[in-house]
Length: 58
Image (cartoon, rainbow, N blue to C red; front, side, top):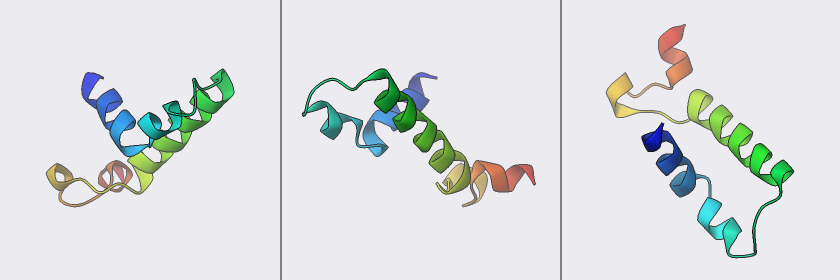
């Protein structure tokens, strides 16, 4: 989980969004939901043979 949240902060633009102030609950929820969708469906990973997590399940 620690690795996932570190990746979320780096790859989602979370740090840049915080520069304009704290995010609301709705903004945070959308950020996390969008990142989980990206992480599972679009982000290829070397340790998975250059596939997305969902491609390895199918």
